[in-house]
Length: 325
Image (tube, rainbow, N blue to C red; front, side, top):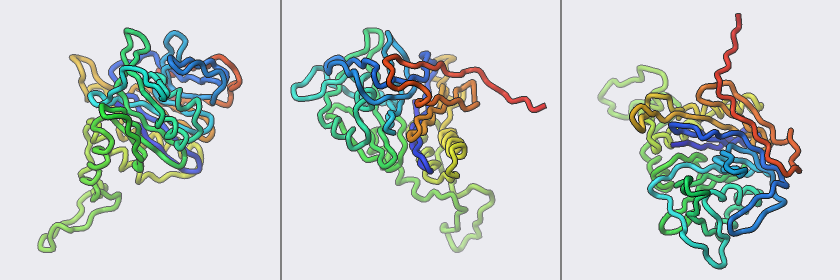
């Protein structure tokens, strides 16, 4: 399970948690402009936008989990098991794209969400696996730039594109239901509550933080959606890079998963394997991992973006502690 979010101060930030019981050797990958990007049915793109994100490299191909291109367009795929449905065959007069190609297909060509929407209108998203041992992941996607956020869901009745005013995404249920259930929490506030229960009863606030009383604290995807949306909507940060990045990690920290709290199999627990935060304006990809809380950063523009070779940076996964005495 996962959570993605957007955040804007002086710059625009985008990131996600990856929550799972095991890692697949993901790393930070920079895909430069002249990397030959092959598509099963759409030929080879030899010149395109540069991309930075987290990916698993399989047979030299980057399978992106989340990424940002040099124009500031951001995209992440999150589990949508039981609801995701893709086409079984190619279609005439459509862009036939395999599910695993969707992120590079959009980010290599689109500069903003408006262009992404136009590409999605022509899209036939296929269930073709990357190879036999890697079936097509059941996902839905969040796509964002500094002005707009959308959610894309490919279901049995077709591809749906939704405005996403909450600026967050988790997993099930489908996005319209996630948004509708926010209505149950419209009473939440960062301010202390007043007694609306009864004028006949001497009720009072007996603790700080009671404005958010009722904010769900469990690890279900719907509860994480509510919690992330509330924390993001009420977050206050300075405009500096360090303040903004720090605040973004605090936003996603509200949905962090600790080992032992979500058992998926006997003795196996879902944890937040990594948390990312990308400054989409500057192309800086920040991240932490479950065993390393120190923020690490990879700068897209420190590399030769006119190269044809992938740049791969293994994630820092060993805890780094500052001993002050």
